[in-house]
Image (cartoon, rainbow, N blue to C red):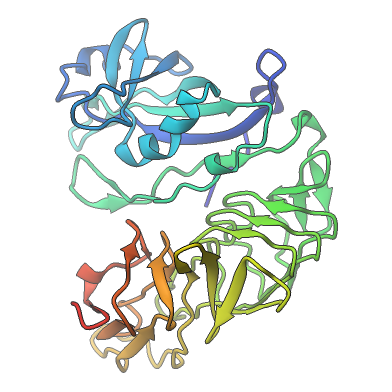
Length: 371
């Protein structure tokens, strides 16, 4: 779950330019580039610089991380792909060290700095909100995988200090953007997004614990992982919603409780979105993009890992030409074996299409007759 927002002072405008987006990222490649010494000299709170490197032979989107002109490493490629265009367009950034190093199993400092990247822009930059790929991070000490950065938020107003609660949610000063949930509040039976809200920020309602959600007619945008813990919700999408990021309603399976995807109904007057067989799809110039897959799953039968439940087929709706990032929540730990089927060959399968599970965890994938 994302951490609590930082102090209001940290969210203040930079030279009059409002903060639009922030995310934590680990610096990579320090050992490969001989920068471990520079990383180990970092201290909490040190400001570091992001430098675009379009001439990089390995990655034209590369973003260097420097401190006092010294190379520390690079931002992970997944972040660089998302942010390179914004940096090239002149978006201002401030980057600060949140954790100078990590410790390995023998308690030695290892050069894996964690930095907090802040983007400042006067105009709305929706593309900064949707990380098309939310990558898992490999632990450099034991080789295991861990959750991605914990801390991300987006503010759509010039006065972050005015953020306040409105109904079940925390909103921006202009009451147009949901930015989070009140800490320590009991989850409502149904999470009600107030009228007047136009967008829901990434991770804003993650792990809400509610049994459903009601979206207002004023809503226009739902960003990636806005409802990252949605499970079994009936989601009615109003006519005015023009953008729902793939993976906005990703669900995490809980062992012993199973997992149930959301079922979507889209207002027939909506020109950008549609629902088929309960799945949510977006209309594009090239066809239909799968944004969230619905599967009619049986109830979880038991908690014994030695007794797998019956196999389940996840079926991609007909007419789908693209599967968006994190659009498919697959849970082989709950149902095994599992098949993921498409009625016809897909044109594009985005990186990170699988959320909280993957084909290498026992899921058989068949894209229109192609395994």
